Amino acid sequence: MNIAWAYGAPTDRKDAVKLVRAAYDRGVRFFDSAEVYGPFISEEVVGEALAAVRDDVVITSKFGFEVDPVTKERRGLNSRPEYIKGVAERCLKRLKTDRIDLFYQHRVDPNVPIEDVAGAIKDLIAAGKVRHFGLSEAGGATIRRAHAVQPVTAVQNEYSIWTRDPEHEVLPTCEELGIGFVPWSPLGMGFLTGKVTPSTVFDAKNDMRASATFPRFTPEALRANWVLVELLQRVAKRKAATPAQIALAWLLARKPFIVPIPGTTKLSHLEENLGALNAKLSAEDVREIDDGFAKMTIQGKRAPDALLEIHDDGANLGSSSAGGHGKSPLPNH
Image 1 (spheres, rainbow, N blue to C red):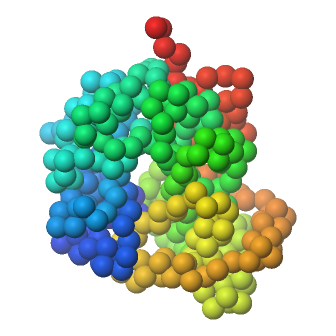
Image 2 (cartoon, rainbow, N blue to C red; image 1 turned 90 degrees about the horizontal axis):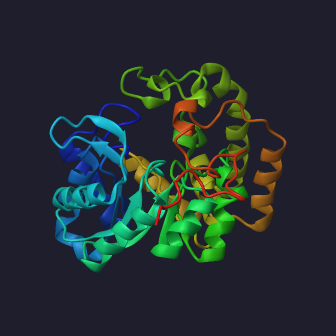
């Protein structure tokens, strides 16, 4: 996502392709993209960068937002089965491939039964155009309903040391059903690296932390939450690591089925992130981080209300899908 938009102007296309190839050259084999990133830029870059090594990598993408193929205008959610199949064809062309290894529903559509969505993916799998089905920002009830029609391979929700929303419902559901979990924004939109400080000035036009007014990125919230970075810095110093590496190592220590996907636009950050594999945390280290976090009160919601509202029941802290069916309507048939 980072190379296409979100935290500044898009990365130069040639530099972005080089970065993706550099990741491959350093052993990365799992690459995340989405139609809406750019839109289209992320898929095009991934497709160009990995075409020569396609059979040696896992490429993922996401559907679920209606994006005009010509004007690139985003028109809200759309997971109607026929629309999904059309999106898949366009994604395949941009990714320069004949199959998408993992195709996520980007957000649960409140107008389309998840059974119909899963059925569309099942058809795409039967046709050889998709290999596996995923969900993003889904809650437990929706995951179970989808999984009953077409096995869900992975769920991608936001998760990090300062965003614990999946712990109360989604992670237990994934563990029970044997579903992988892919945390997006594992570095807290950069905050957990220690490189975003209370004095950081964001690009009001191109950086969504400012343009979309993310509550945790106001000067007041950054100052109030800096104590968490200081905790990571203390652990990092003892481990001869960086705060970013400790934040990623913490996720890797949680469960064996958790695979974080840190994004970056810089080679130095890519190499730093990969260094997390060498930052092994003991049970005592994890307990120190969790005990320290438990004493803190994080200021600010993880996202603006308008974005939180399109997450599924049970995906956000304080919500639950227990006893319900999630935001996806029940099928008529």
